[in-house]
Length: 256
Length: 242
Image (cartoon, rainbow over all chains, first blue to last red; front, side, top):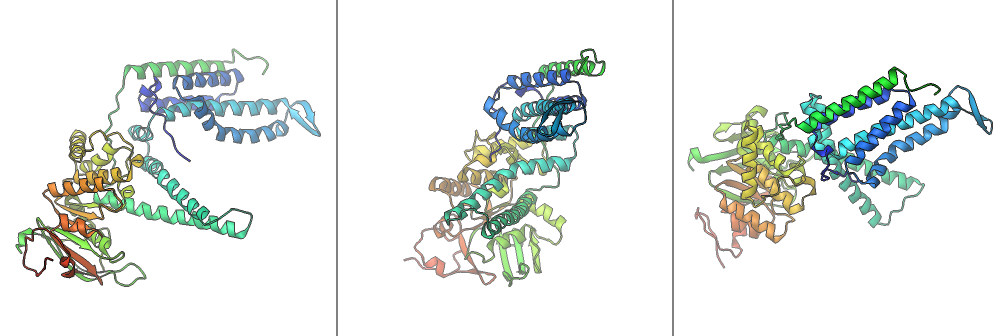
C-alpha cells in the first residue's frame, strides 16, 4: 500500500487555492447527494468527469481509486433491484426485478461515482499537508486536522513496519493456511503493530516536546486568493444553480 | 569548576522503569560550558534514559536536577530547558513529522515564538549550513537514512540551543555522512554530550570520554589506553600513550 500523491502534475486545478477546492467539493457533494432526478445526476457525473480530465490524472490511477467505492456498489446491485417495491420488469427465477429498484441502484451508482471523481480531483491535485492547512484555515476542528496530519505522516512508517514483520515471518518459512497457527501469527502481527505504533507515538510526542511544542501548529504556507479562484468559484456556482434548477423545477423530466 | 559555567548539575539521580531494577542509581553529572564529552556504555545501560531525564521526558524517582543554575522540578521548568537544550533522537523517523523538510526545520523556531518569515529564514540558513540547500520541499519520509539524520540535526540546530545532547548521531550512517556530522560538530561552538559506541568518533570530537556502568557515570581510565592523538584540555587525569 502506498499513498501516492499526484501533485506534481501541473494542471489548472492544481493552481486553485485549496480552501476554494474544499468548499467547492463540499457543496457539489451536497447538491449531488440530495438530487434525485437522473438527468441531474448524469450531468453531475459528466461535469465531474470533465473536471477530472483537466486535472491530468492518469486514467489508470482514476480507475484504481474508484475500485473500492464500486465494489460496495456491486453489492447494492445484487439486492436493491429485488428488494425495492414497485412494478416488476422481469423475473430472475422466482425473484422479480422492479423498475424502481433498478433506478434506485443506478442513482446510487451515479451519485457515488460523481462525488468520488470530484474528491479524487481535489485530493490528487493538492498535497495532503496543504489540504490540512487549508482545513485549519477554514476553521475545522484543530484536533481533527492534527489527527489527519499524523495519520498521513505515519501511515508510511506503519506500512514499512508491517512489511518488515511480514518479511520476517516469510523468511522463516511461514505460509498462511486455515489453521490456528496462522490465526495466532496474524494476531501477533496486529498486536505488534499496535504496540509499536503506541511506542512510536510516545517517541514522536517526546521529540515534539523537545522542540517546544505547545499544542499549536503554525503554518508557513500562505494561501492567496487569485483570479483563477474567482473564476472557479463562479463556474461552480453556475453549475450548482443549473443542477438545482433542473432538480427542483422539474423542467426536464417527465417519465422517469 | 566555575559555578557560572556549570550548565547541568545532576545529583543522586535514581530511575527505574516499572517492574525493572534501577537503571540509574544515584547518578551524578556535572557538565560545564564548552565541554564536549562522550558517553559510552553497553546497550540498556541508561544512556538514553539519562538524556530523557535531562529533558524532562522522564521523571527521576529521586535526586536533584539543576540546569542553567536553576533547580528544575516541574513540567513548566522543563519548557525553558527544552528551548535551550537540543536533543537529537536515535531514530530520525521520530523526529521528523512534518511532510516537508522546510516545515519540519521551521517547527522549532515557530514554537520559540518567531514569526513565519523569521522561522523560514532560520530554517533555510540552517539547511544551508548543513549543505542541505535544495532540500526544502523534499518529503521527509522519502529521504534516505543519512539525509533524515542530517535533517533531524538541522531541526535541532534551528532552535539555536546552548547544549546539544546527541544520541548515537552516526550509528548506521555511511562514512560520508559521518564525516559531515563530525565536521559540523567541530565547527559549532557548542557544548555537547555525545552518546556513541564508536570510540574513534568520540576520541576525535570529544574532550573526554565517560562510561555508564551500574547506573553511574564513571571516568574510564582504561579507555584512554588506546592509541589516540588529541589534546587534553584538562590534563589532570592519568593517561598513557603507546
